[in-house]
Amino acid sequence: MTRESGSAEGLDERAVLLAAGLADLAVSTLSAGFGAVRGLLRRSDAAEVAAEAERDLEARGRLVLDRYASPPPAHLEVLARHVLARRASDDV
Image (cartoon, rainbow, N blue to C red; front, side, top):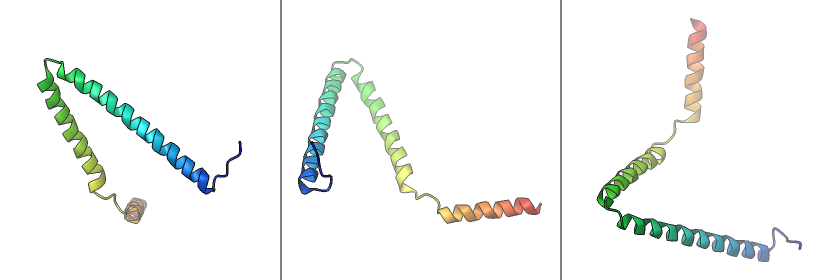
């Protein structure tokens, strides 16, 4: 079976396959999540588990904000500082 990678039918088929795979992944993830929630509701220490989950989510949110909120240093600025430091060490 030969497929043309640039044809419209091939792209449509690929989009449908990707959407179906994504939907299957979402359904399986949700069903696993519901199973975990059901198991948590049966525990006697559910309040402690919920508090720990809240702390974990806050820590995860802090990491995400730290990763994306502050821009990385400018590449050329880092290189310029490196050159200046090297020149200073060569002069000594």
